[in-house]
Amino acid sequence: MKSPSSSSQITKAWVEFMLTEYESKKMPRAKVTVVTYSIRNATKPGESFNAELILLDVQAELSGGERPEETQETKEYNLVVKFLTEDPVSCELIKRCGYHIKELMMYSEVVKELNDFQAVHANDEFRLYLPEYIYGKCTEKEYVLVMENIKVSGYETNPKVKGLDFQHAKLAVNHVARLHAVSYAYDKSHNFLEKYPCFQFSNAISTFFKPVVWASLANCITFLKSKKTYEDMVHKLETGKTTLPLKFAAMWDDQTRHKFLCLTHGDFWNSNLMFRHGTVTQDGERSIESLKLIDWQISQWNNPVFDLHYLLNTSTSCEMRREHAEEILRHYHKTFTEATTKMGTPVPNWNYEQFKAEFERTSLVGFLMGMCLIQGTLSKAGENINHAGSTCLNNACCHPCKVVVDKIKAGMAKAIVSFAFKPSLSYIMQASVKRILSPIGQELVEGSNEVLNGRLLDLLIEADEKGVLDVLTL
Image (cartoon, rainbow, N blue to C red):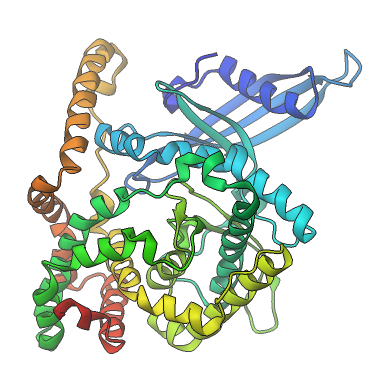
Protein backbone atom coordinates (compact mmCIF):
# COMPACT_ATOMS: atom_id res chain seq x y z
CA MET A 1 0.00 0.00 0.00
CA LYS A 2 1.24 3.47 -0.88
CA SER A 3 2.30 5.43 2.18
CA PRO A 4 0.94 8.91 2.93
CA SER A 5 3.35 11.80 2.41
CA SER A 6 1.68 14.12 4.91
CA SER A 7 -0.91 14.08 7.69
CA SER A 8 -3.69 15.04 5.26
CA GLN A 9 -3.20 11.74 3.39
CA ILE A 10 -3.53 9.43 6.41
CA THR A 11 -6.46 7.04 5.93
CA LYS A 12 -8.09 4.34 8.01
CA ALA A 13 -7.00 1.73 5.47
CA TRP A 14 -3.34 2.77 5.76
CA VAL A 15 -3.47 2.82 9.58
CA GLU A 16 -4.87 -0.73 9.56
CA PHE A 17 -2.24 -1.86 7.05
CA MET A 18 0.62 -0.27 9.01
CA LEU A 19 -0.46 -1.67 12.39
CA THR A 20 -1.18 -5.12 10.94
CA GLU A 21 2.38 -5.25 9.61
CA TYR A 22 3.67 -4.25 13.05
CA GLU A 23 1.63 -6.85 14.94
CA SER A 24 2.37 -9.57 12.39
CA LYS A 25 6.06 -9.37 13.22
CA LYS A 26 5.17 -10.50 16.74
CA MET A 27 2.22 -12.77 15.86
CA PRO A 28 2.04 -14.18 12.33
CA ARG A 29 -1.37 -13.71 10.69
CA ALA A 30 -2.40 -11.04 13.20
CA LYS A 31 -4.96 -8.52 12.00
CA VAL A 32 -5.71 -5.00 13.22
CA THR A 33 -9.13 -3.45 12.65
CA VAL A 34 -9.33 0.25 13.43
CA VAL A 35 -12.36 1.39 15.42
CA THR A 36 -11.45 5.08 15.65
CA TYR A 37 -8.33 7.19 15.10
CA SER A 38 -7.39 10.83 15.52
CA ILE A 39 -4.46 12.96 14.40
CA ARG A 40 -3.06 16.23 15.67
CA ASN A 41 0.13 18.23 15.32
CA ALA A 42 2.97 17.19 17.60
CA THR A 43 4.75 20.54 17.39
CA LYS A 44 3.84 24.20 17.29
CA PRO A 45 4.43 26.22 14.11
CA GLY A 46 8.13 26.94 13.69
CA GLU A 47 9.30 24.30 16.19
CA SER A 48 10.20 21.56 13.69
CA PHE A 49 12.63 22.55 10.95
CA ASN A 50 13.16 19.14 9.34
CA ALA A 51 9.86 17.26 9.47
CA GLU A 52 6.12 17.23 9.88
CA LEU A 53 5.43 15.49 13.20
CA ILE A 54 1.95 14.11 13.88
CA LEU A 55 0.44 12.40 16.91
CA LEU A 56 -1.71 9.46 15.89
CA ASP A 57 -4.02 7.88 18.51
CA VAL A 58 -5.80 4.68 17.52
CA GLN A 59 -8.47 2.49 19.10
CA ALA A 60 -8.44 -0.92 17.41
CA GLU A 61 -9.40 -4.57 17.63
CA LEU A 62 -6.56 -7.08 17.41
CA SER A 63 -7.41 -10.55 16.12
CA GLY A 64 -5.80 -13.53 14.42
CA GLY A 65 -2.42 -14.91 15.29
CA GLU A 66 -2.64 -17.74 17.82
CA ARG A 67 -6.04 -16.58 19.12
CA PRO A 68 -9.26 -18.45 18.40
CA GLU A 69 -10.94 -17.01 15.27
CA GLU A 70 -13.67 -15.11 17.10
CA THR A 71 -11.43 -13.77 19.87
CA GLN A 72 -10.52 -10.10 19.72
CA GLU A 73 -8.43 -7.87 21.92
CA THR A 74 -9.14 -4.19 22.28
CA LYS A 75 -5.91 -2.25 21.98
CA GLU A 76 -4.91 1.41 22.02
CA TYR A 77 -1.94 2.77 20.09
CA ASN A 78 -0.33 6.13 20.82
CA LEU A 79 2.07 6.94 18.00
CA VAL A 80 4.26 9.63 16.50
CA VAL A 81 4.28 9.81 12.70
CA LYS A 82 7.15 11.61 11.00
CA PHE A 83 6.98 12.85 7.41
CA LEU A 84 9.47 14.87 5.42
CA THR A 85 8.97 18.59 5.76
CA GLU A 86 6.73 20.22 3.18
CA ASP A 87 9.25 23.03 2.67
CA PRO A 88 10.85 22.06 -0.68
CA VAL A 89 14.32 23.46 0.04
CA SER A 90 14.58 21.80 3.45
CA CYS A 91 13.22 18.57 1.97
CA GLU A 92 15.78 18.60 -0.84
CA LEU A 93 18.58 19.29 1.64
CA ILE A 94 17.48 16.37 3.83
CA LYS A 95 17.42 14.06 0.82
CA ARG A 96 20.79 15.34 -0.41
CA CYS A 97 22.38 14.60 2.98
CA GLY A 98 20.47 11.35 3.55
CA TYR A 99 19.21 12.48 6.96
CA HIS A 100 15.84 10.72 6.57
CA ILE A 101 17.46 7.42 5.60
CA LYS A 102 19.78 7.47 8.60
CA GLU A 103 16.99 8.08 11.09
CA LEU A 104 14.86 5.28 9.66
CA MET A 105 17.86 2.95 9.73
CA MET A 106 18.57 3.82 13.37
CA TYR A 107 15.05 2.87 14.44
CA SER A 108 14.51 -0.12 12.17
CA GLU A 109 17.92 -1.85 12.19
CA VAL A 110 20.97 -0.22 13.73
CA VAL A 111 19.93 0.08 17.38
CA LYS A 112 18.60 -3.49 17.41
CA GLU A 113 21.87 -4.73 15.90
CA LEU A 114 23.97 -2.82 18.44
CA ASN A 115 21.78 -3.89 21.36
CA ASP A 116 22.00 -7.54 20.33
CA PHE A 117 25.79 -7.18 20.12
CA GLN A 118 26.22 -5.63 23.56
CA ALA A 119 23.79 -8.13 25.08
CA VAL A 120 26.12 -10.95 24.01
CA HIS A 121 29.40 -9.21 24.82
CA ALA A 122 28.44 -7.14 27.87
CA ASN A 123 25.46 -8.96 29.42
CA ASP A 124 23.09 -6.21 28.25
CA GLU A 125 24.75 -3.68 30.55
CA PHE A 126 25.04 -0.91 27.94
CA ARG A 127 21.67 -1.03 26.20
CA LEU A 128 20.60 1.87 23.99
CA TYR A 129 17.10 3.24 24.54
CA LEU A 130 14.90 4.76 21.83
CA PRO A 131 11.14 4.95 21.34
CA GLU A 132 9.85 1.65 19.91
CA TYR A 133 9.91 1.39 16.13
CA ILE A 134 6.48 0.65 14.65
CA TYR A 135 6.66 1.11 10.88
CA GLY A 136 8.74 2.82 8.21
CA LYS A 137 8.98 3.28 4.46
CA CYS A 138 11.70 5.00 2.49
CA THR A 139 11.78 5.05 -1.32
CA GLU A 140 12.44 7.71 -3.92
CA LYS A 141 8.83 8.92 -3.65
CA GLU A 142 7.73 7.73 -0.18
CA TYR A 143 8.91 8.45 3.33
CA VAL A 144 7.22 7.84 6.63
CA LEU A 145 8.49 6.82 10.07
CA VAL A 146 6.14 5.67 12.85
CA MET A 147 7.28 5.20 16.44
CA GLU A 148 5.67 5.01 19.85
CA ASN A 149 4.62 8.24 21.55
CA ILE A 150 6.64 7.98 24.75
CA LYS A 151 5.04 11.10 26.23
CA VAL A 152 2.05 8.89 27.05
CA SER A 153 4.41 6.84 29.24
CA GLY A 154 5.52 9.92 31.14
CA TYR A 155 8.59 10.94 29.13
CA GLU A 156 9.21 14.64 28.64
CA THR A 157 11.93 17.02 27.52
CA ASN A 158 13.62 19.34 29.95
CA PRO A 159 12.61 23.00 29.28
CA LYS A 160 15.21 24.43 26.90
CA VAL A 161 15.15 27.84 28.60
CA LYS A 162 16.12 26.14 31.85
CA GLY A 163 18.93 23.97 30.55
CA LEU A 164 20.11 20.66 31.97
CA ASP A 165 21.16 20.44 35.58
CA PHE A 166 24.00 18.20 36.73
CA GLN A 167 21.97 15.01 37.23
CA HIS A 168 20.20 15.25 33.86
CA ALA A 169 23.45 16.05 32.03
CA LYS A 170 25.25 13.19 33.79
CA LEU A 171 22.61 10.68 32.70
CA ALA A 172 22.68 12.08 29.16
CA VAL A 173 26.44 11.57 28.76
CA ASN A 174 26.11 8.08 30.24
CA HIS A 175 23.74 7.15 27.41
CA VAL A 176 25.80 8.74 24.65
CA ALA A 177 28.91 7.00 26.02
CA ARG A 178 27.06 3.71 25.51
CA LEU A 179 26.32 4.62 21.89
CA HIS A 180 29.95 5.53 21.25
CA ALA A 181 31.36 2.49 23.02
CA VAL A 182 29.02 -0.15 21.59
CA SER A 183 29.38 1.14 18.01
CA TYR A 184 33.17 1.30 18.38
CA ALA A 185 33.31 -2.26 19.72
CA TYR A 186 30.87 -3.53 17.08
CA ASP A 187 32.97 -2.02 14.30
CA LYS A 188 36.06 -3.93 15.35
CA SER A 189 34.49 -7.23 14.34
CA HIS A 190 31.65 -6.28 11.97
CA ASN A 191 32.80 -3.21 9.97
CA PHE A 192 29.93 -0.88 10.74
CA LEU A 193 30.22 1.34 7.64
CA GLU A 194 30.37 -1.61 5.29
CA LYS A 195 27.00 -2.77 6.61
CA TYR A 196 25.51 0.73 7.03
CA PRO A 197 27.25 2.97 4.45
CA CYS A 198 24.67 5.76 4.82
CA PHE A 199 26.40 6.76 8.09
CA GLN A 200 29.70 7.49 6.34
CA PHE A 201 31.03 10.88 7.38
CA SER A 202 30.00 13.74 5.11
CA ASN A 203 31.19 17.35 5.12
CA ALA A 204 27.63 18.48 4.37
CA ILE A 205 27.27 19.71 7.94
CA SER A 206 30.29 22.00 7.74
CA THR A 207 29.29 23.13 4.23
CA PHE A 208 25.95 24.42 5.44
CA PHE A 209 27.23 25.41 8.84
CA LYS A 210 29.72 27.92 7.43
CA PRO A 211 27.19 30.62 6.47
CA VAL A 212 25.34 30.04 9.74
CA VAL A 213 28.61 30.63 11.60
CA TRP A 214 29.17 33.86 9.68
CA ALA A 215 25.65 35.11 10.36
CA SER A 216 25.65 34.09 14.03
CA LEU A 217 29.06 35.68 14.49
CA ALA A 218 27.78 38.92 12.98
CA ASN A 219 24.92 38.86 15.47
CA CYS A 220 27.38 38.34 18.34
CA ILE A 221 29.55 41.26 17.23
CA THR A 222 26.52 43.55 16.96
CA PHE A 223 25.32 42.36 20.35
CA LEU A 224 28.68 42.91 22.09
CA LYS A 225 29.12 46.33 20.50
CA SER A 226 25.77 47.39 21.96
CA LYS A 227 27.11 46.52 25.41
CA LYS A 228 30.14 48.84 24.94
CA THR A 229 32.21 46.96 27.53
CA TYR A 230 33.64 44.08 25.49
CA GLU A 231 35.95 45.84 23.01
CA ASP A 232 38.69 43.22 23.29
CA MET A 233 36.28 40.37 22.58
CA VAL A 234 34.77 42.28 19.65
CA HIS A 235 38.25 42.79 18.23
CA LYS A 236 38.99 39.06 18.41
CA LEU A 237 35.72 38.12 16.72
CA GLU A 238 36.07 40.74 13.99
CA THR A 239 39.71 39.81 13.34
CA GLY A 240 38.90 36.15 12.96
CA LYS A 241 35.50 36.28 11.26
CA THR A 242 36.85 35.57 7.78
CA THR A 243 38.86 32.51 8.86
CA LEU A 244 36.52 31.25 11.57
CA PRO A 245 34.32 29.03 9.33
CA LEU A 246 37.44 27.63 7.69
CA LYS A 247 38.96 26.75 11.05
CA PHE A 248 35.72 25.04 12.03
CA ALA A 249 35.57 23.05 8.80
CA ALA A 250 39.21 22.00 9.08
CA MET A 251 38.71 20.77 12.63
CA TRP A 252 35.38 19.08 11.83
CA ASP A 253 36.23 17.52 8.48
CA ASP A 254 39.83 16.33 8.96
CA GLN A 255 39.08 12.78 10.06
CA THR A 256 42.76 11.84 10.03
CA ARG A 257 43.43 14.08 13.05
CA HIS A 258 40.82 12.45 15.26
CA LYS A 259 41.96 9.83 17.75
CA PHE A 260 39.26 7.36 16.72
CA LEU A 261 35.76 7.37 15.23
CA CYS A 262 32.42 5.82 16.13
CA LEU A 263 28.69 6.36 15.65
CA THR A 264 27.68 9.77 16.99
CA HIS A 265 24.22 11.24 17.57
CA GLY A 266 25.08 14.53 15.86
CA ASP A 267 22.24 16.59 17.35
CA PHE A 268 22.81 15.76 21.00
CA TRP A 269 21.07 18.56 22.90
CA ASN A 270 18.36 19.24 25.42
CA SER A 271 15.30 18.87 23.17
CA ASN A 272 16.38 15.45 21.86
CA LEU A 273 16.53 13.95 25.35
CA MET A 274 13.30 12.48 26.75
CA PHE A 275 13.39 11.91 30.52
CA ARG A 276 10.92 10.04 32.72
CA HIS A 277 10.86 11.18 36.33
CA GLY A 278 9.83 9.47 39.51
CA THR A 279 8.83 10.72 42.90
CA VAL A 280 10.05 13.93 44.50
CA THR A 281 13.22 13.40 46.53
CA GLN A 282 13.94 14.81 50.01
CA ASP A 283 15.64 17.89 48.56
CA GLY A 284 12.56 18.70 46.51
CA GLU A 285 13.91 17.39 43.18
CA ARG A 286 12.29 14.67 41.11
CA SER A 287 14.30 11.50 40.67
CA ILE A 288 15.13 10.45 37.11
CA GLU A 289 13.91 6.97 36.22
CA SER A 290 15.04 6.65 32.61
CA LEU A 291 16.08 8.42 29.41
CA LYS A 292 15.44 7.82 25.72
CA LEU A 293 17.18 9.57 22.84
CA ILE A 294 15.25 10.87 19.82
CA ASP A 295 15.88 12.64 16.49
CA TRP A 296 18.69 10.71 14.79
CA GLN A 297 18.76 12.44 11.39
CA ILE A 298 22.27 13.87 11.77
CA SER A 299 23.89 10.75 13.23
CA GLN A 300 27.12 9.76 11.47
CA TRP A 301 30.52 8.12 11.90
CA ASN A 302 32.54 10.87 13.55
CA ASN A 303 34.63 12.05 16.52
CA PRO A 304 32.70 11.21 19.73
CA VAL A 305 33.82 14.32 21.63
CA PHE A 306 31.70 16.45 19.29
CA ASP A 307 28.55 15.07 20.94
CA LEU A 308 29.88 16.18 24.32
CA HIS A 309 30.74 19.66 23.07
CA TYR A 310 27.29 19.97 21.55
CA LEU A 311 25.50 19.03 24.77
CA LEU A 312 27.55 21.15 27.15
CA ASN A 313 27.64 24.29 25.01
CA THR A 314 24.01 24.26 23.89
CA SER A 315 22.11 22.80 26.81
CA THR A 316 23.76 23.79 30.09
CA SER A 317 24.34 27.06 31.90
CA CYS A 318 27.78 28.53 32.45
CA GLU A 319 27.33 28.05 36.19
CA MET A 320 26.58 24.35 35.77
CA ARG A 321 29.63 23.89 33.55
CA ARG A 322 31.92 25.70 35.99
CA GLU A 323 30.77 23.51 38.87
CA HIS A 324 30.28 20.14 37.19
CA ALA A 325 31.87 19.94 33.71
CA GLU A 326 34.91 18.07 35.00
CA GLU A 327 32.77 15.51 36.82
CA ILE A 328 30.52 15.07 33.79
CA LEU A 329 33.50 14.45 31.50
CA ARG A 330 35.02 11.98 33.95
CA HIS A 331 31.70 10.15 34.16
CA TYR A 332 31.53 9.92 30.38
CA HIS A 333 35.11 8.63 30.11
CA LYS A 334 34.54 6.07 32.88
CA THR A 335 31.38 4.74 31.22
CA PHE A 336 32.98 4.58 27.78
CA THR A 337 36.15 2.91 29.06
CA GLU A 338 34.29 0.32 31.12
CA ALA A 339 32.03 -0.52 28.18
CA THR A 340 34.77 -0.93 25.58
CA THR A 341 36.92 -2.92 28.00
CA LYS A 342 34.08 -5.26 28.90
CA MET A 343 33.37 -5.87 25.20
CA GLY A 344 37.03 -6.69 24.63
CA THR A 345 37.90 -3.59 22.59
CA PRO A 346 39.60 -1.01 24.86
CA VAL A 347 40.84 2.07 23.02
CA PRO A 348 44.65 2.21 23.25
CA ASN A 349 46.23 5.35 24.69
CA TRP A 350 42.92 6.78 25.84
CA ASN A 351 43.25 7.55 29.53
CA TYR A 352 41.39 10.52 30.97
CA GLU A 353 44.22 12.97 30.33
CA GLN A 354 44.42 11.95 26.67
CA PHE A 355 40.64 12.16 26.32
CA LYS A 356 40.62 15.61 27.95
CA ALA A 357 43.38 16.80 25.61
CA GLU A 358 41.26 15.81 22.60
CA PHE A 359 38.25 17.55 24.11
CA GLU A 360 40.23 20.75 24.57
CA ARG A 361 41.80 20.52 21.09
CA THR A 362 38.32 20.66 19.56
CA SER A 363 36.90 23.35 21.89
CA LEU A 364 36.40 25.76 18.99
CA VAL A 365 33.86 23.38 17.45
CA GLY A 366 31.93 23.28 20.72
CA PHE A 367 31.91 27.04 21.05
CA LEU A 368 30.63 27.55 17.49
CA MET A 369 27.92 24.94 17.88
CA GLY A 370 26.77 26.60 21.08
CA MET A 371 26.92 30.10 19.58
CA CYS A 372 24.70 29.11 16.65
CA LEU A 373 22.24 26.81 18.40
CA ILE A 374 21.63 29.12 21.34
CA GLN A 375 20.57 31.85 18.92
CA GLY A 376 18.44 29.49 16.87
CA THR A 377 16.61 27.78 19.73
CA LEU A 378 16.24 30.43 22.43
CA SER A 379 15.37 33.38 20.22
CA LYS A 380 11.70 34.34 19.94
CA ALA A 381 12.46 35.89 16.56
CA GLY A 382 13.89 32.55 15.46
CA GLU A 383 10.57 30.84 16.04
CA ASN A 384 9.10 32.78 13.12
CA ILE A 385 11.88 31.96 10.65
CA ASN A 386 10.53 28.48 9.88
CA HIS A 387 6.85 29.37 10.23
CA ALA A 388 5.61 29.56 6.64
CA GLY A 389 1.97 29.96 7.63
CA SER A 390 -1.09 28.79 5.72
CA THR A 391 -1.77 29.43 2.05
CA CYS A 392 -4.83 29.48 -0.16
CA LEU A 393 -3.26 26.63 -2.17
CA ASN A 394 -3.96 24.30 0.76
CA ASN A 395 -7.67 24.57 -0.03
CA ALA A 396 -8.98 21.37 -1.62
CA CYS A 397 -10.49 23.19 -4.61
CA CYS A 398 -7.05 24.54 -5.49
CA HIS A 399 -5.39 21.12 -5.51
CA PRO A 400 -4.59 21.02 -9.26
CA CYS A 401 -2.87 24.41 -9.03
CA LYS A 402 -1.02 23.30 -5.90
CA VAL A 403 0.35 20.22 -7.67
CA VAL A 404 1.83 22.37 -10.42
CA VAL A 405 3.23 24.93 -7.97
CA ASP A 406 4.73 22.17 -5.79
CA LYS A 407 6.52 20.67 -8.80
CA ILE A 408 7.94 24.08 -9.70
CA LYS A 409 9.08 24.58 -6.09
CA ALA A 410 10.66 21.13 -6.00
CA GLY A 411 12.62 21.88 -9.18
CA MET A 412 13.78 25.22 -7.80
CA ALA A 413 14.73 23.57 -4.51
CA LYS A 414 17.09 21.15 -6.26
CA ALA A 415 18.77 24.06 -8.00
CA ILE A 416 19.07 26.04 -4.76
CA VAL A 417 20.59 23.15 -2.80
CA SER A 418 23.04 22.34 -5.61
CA PHE A 419 23.91 26.03 -5.70
CA ALA A 420 24.57 26.03 -1.95
CA PHE A 421 27.19 23.29 -2.30
CA LYS A 422 29.33 25.32 -4.72
CA PRO A 423 32.27 26.92 -2.85
CA SER A 424 32.62 29.65 -5.48
CA LEU A 425 29.15 30.95 -4.60
CA SER A 426 29.48 30.73 -0.83
CA TYR A 427 29.45 34.50 -0.41
CA ILE A 428 25.89 34.63 -1.75
CA MET A 429 24.76 31.97 0.73
CA GLN A 430 26.54 33.90 3.47
CA ALA A 431 24.64 37.08 2.66
CA SER A 432 21.33 35.21 2.40
CA VAL A 433 21.69 33.45 5.74
CA LYS A 434 22.84 36.68 7.41
CA ARG A 435 19.68 38.39 6.18
CA ILE A 436 17.50 35.55 7.47
CA LEU A 437 19.11 35.54 10.92
CA SER A 438 19.37 39.30 11.34
CA PRO A 439 16.09 39.51 13.37
CA ILE A 440 17.84 37.45 16.04
CA GLY A 441 20.64 40.01 16.16
CA GLN A 442 18.10 42.78 16.62
CA GLU A 443 16.48 40.83 19.44
CA LEU A 444 19.86 40.51 21.14
CA VAL A 445 20.46 44.26 20.94
CA GLU A 446 17.00 45.06 22.28
CA GLY A 447 17.67 42.86 25.31
CA SER A 448 14.08 41.73 25.74
CA ASN A 449 14.98 38.03 25.90
CA GLU A 450 16.97 37.67 29.12
CA VAL A 451 17.51 33.92 28.74
CA LEU A 452 18.92 34.26 25.22
CA ASN A 453 21.13 37.23 26.08
CA GLY A 454 22.39 35.73 29.32
CA ARG A 455 23.18 32.28 27.88
CA LEU A 456 24.96 33.68 24.83
CA LEU A 457 26.97 36.27 26.76
CA ASP A 458 28.07 33.64 29.27
CA LEU A 459 29.20 31.37 26.44
CA LEU A 460 31.21 34.15 24.81
CA ILE A 461 32.88 35.20 28.07
CA GLU A 462 33.66 31.59 28.97
CA ALA A 463 35.21 30.92 25.56
CA ASP A 464 37.32 34.06 25.86
CA GLU A 465 38.51 33.12 29.35
CA LYS A 466 39.55 29.67 28.14
CA GLY A 467 41.48 31.14 25.23
CA VAL A 468 39.17 29.66 22.60
CA LEU A 469 38.74 33.04 20.90
CA ASP A 470 42.49 33.55 20.76
CA VAL A 471 42.74 31.06 17.89
CA LEU A 472 40.69 33.47 15.78
CA THR A 473 43.57 35.90 15.59
CA LEU A 474 46.25 33.34 14.77
